[in-house]
Length: 304
Image 1 (cartoon, rainbow, N blue to C red):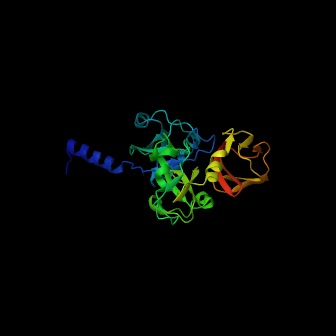
Image 2: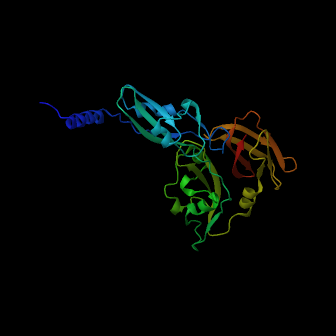
Image 3: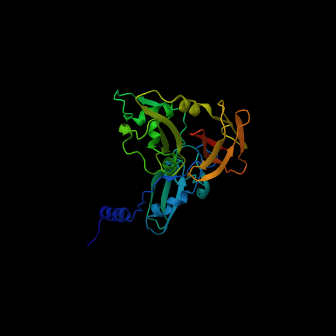
């Protein structure tokens, strides 16, 4: 049978379409903000997506581009995709899968994400529920402080969880299942809140507040919580802890973001303040737990 030119063109086009490369869809790349925390930039290895994009095909190469136009035009590939530092957060990256055997090309995209570190922009408020029955128990909505704590930060970038102990909050275990309707177990009771980015596994932020039923919150609890403050923060070398209260022995414990205890010391403050040398700490976010006279308070700081 003799093929007409139109049939030949259609036949060839059909073969080319069947042979077109088809990229796999890569996951977004996530890097925690550990180098100079807060700057939202990290070094990414874009080639971690290469195997997924190639999708088992042979005779193909992958290049990475900052714009869809560059990927479509096959120009301006990122020169060092193994060590690329993002310039926005999140940042889209466009990968071009190119056949080296004349089977066409295709473009696919993914994002680079450096999860945001939440800041406690405003101190949480203690919660009092006086239901009039005098039994020292009540139902509390622990989420009432979320808007206060975040301030002008976008709540859609974070997730909250609540705990009965600091160790559980640090370990991300035994979260309170229904924080909107929690019944206290002691009165008053300290609740520990934890703010994580949507992408778990990176830096988190802790805060705490008291809940109490059938009566005003303890003056001593409020004074202790609001009395201690740290400076400078971020800190390069020496972290100073100041208290206006007359306290006896104070125990200082410092934890990293994984909840590992890396420093512990007991001290008697001199003129209401004492200093901890942090020269040996690596750059990152830490938590200092201050305990004195039966009270405990936790604050966050950043080591430069």
